[in-house]
Length: 140
Length: 108
Image (cartoon, rainbow over all chains, first blue to last red; front, side):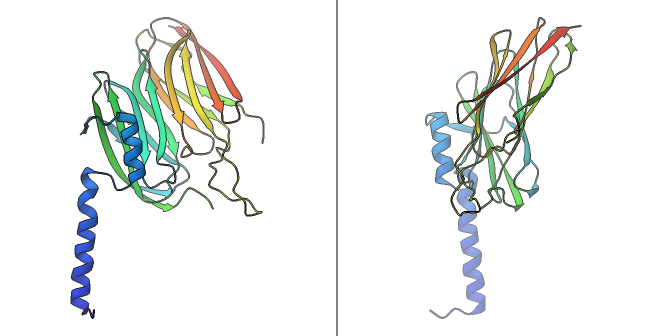
C-alpha cells in the first residue's frame, strides 16, 4: 500500500485517537487491571473522592513524591500501570489514623499513577494522575 | 550495607484529638530485582515489604510495600490520639529481618 503524506498523517491521527479513548475508563495495562481486581474483588469502582498529589513531570523516576488522602477510606492501594510490577503500595488505616499517606515511589516511565480507596462502607473509589517521567527509575 | 537505622519524626507532645503527622525514613537499598550487576546477572530482590505502626498495642497504620518504593523508603502518615503512649514502628525485610523503633508521645 502506497500512502501519501496526507493519508499517512490521517492514519497516524486516527491511531492516536483510538489509543486515547480506552485510556479514560479502563486502564491501559492488563497488569494494572489485574491488581485492581485483586484489591476490589471485582466490585464497581467509582471515580473521584480521592485526593492524589503527584508531580506532573518527574525529572527522576527513582524518587517521585506522592501523597494520597481519601476521607472515609480504610485502605488505599497505589498502582503504577507501566511499571514492571504494577503494585506500588497498599496503606491500611486503623481507628487512630487519618486516611492520608505520603511516600516516594519509582516510576519506570511516563504513566498513570492510580489510587484506589476502599471506603468504610465497602465501596471503592479511584483517581488516576498521569506523570511524565524524564529518566526512568528501574536501572538496568 | 551500612547498618539499617530507622529515623522517625513525631511531635513530642500533642493535644488530645489533634491530627499530627508521623514521618519515617529508613536507609535501605530496596533492591527491586530488576537491576543487573556488573557481571550481567540480575541482583536478587531485597526490599522492605511491610511497615507497621502501633500505638499502645493497637494497629494505627500498615503499609504493604512493593518494589516500586524508592531507595531509603520514606513513609508519612497522620494520626490522632486520646491519651499519651508509645508509638511503635516496625519494618520487615524480605530476608525476615525486622527493624524496630519506638517514640513516646505525651498529651500537653
